[in-house]
Length: 316
Image (cartoon, rainbow, N blue to C red):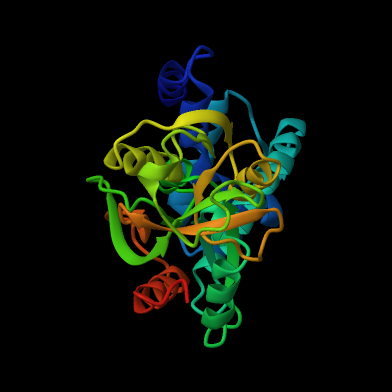
């Protein structure tokens, strides 16, 4: 009785549900074994624990819940109505735990595990499919969860544990992240096909100082690079339109709504001309990033090693 009163005092009706769950969770497997065998001795043998340990655990479980889960009949037990209700939920909870354990083990399997991989929209048409195709030549069973987004969103995905690795630009410099430069990509000044500059092959960016620009929204890495390059060329770009995806910007340029600094397209786009920028040097660095100190599963470690082996050839 004293023990029961102490247990109830420890978990009063006003106690947090989370605290109750943490207290009960370790005893669920014990309870379901006793409920299934209807015998403490047989359940103890099955679980490979002392009978006294199991008996005390069941007594504490009933005391903490404040209800009797078992009716005692000598050495055998049977579930009370409350016990049957609790058993159904306990079995569902243990089933979810088993499924979660199976899932994380499967994701970490060297041959068939999963890599959560983020990358920029501009790398989705050719670069990333080509990388995964090459990687799977030696790792055919590895699965990928692919996320396309802008750079800052992917870095937050790393921090939140939603991504294992990401390809991004600019290459981040943050104490909680590890980043490695893999390659660089030339940026071109994209103008409408009927633009006064469309017959040129090369251009100094300063020659576009009076043009209206279409750019990605603030916060995107390419937008920051565009602003920096224009500043280096001696002007602040006049922004006519902002978007979220590079090919949309090409469409706006083709419609005559401005010019843009963009990486090469996956496929030629009609209605535009793409000029090489000779000054300043118009490139963006592409790097791979991951969370500092975060342990890698075997498939993530293998893909990371593969990406690092592609330094200087990522975009070829």
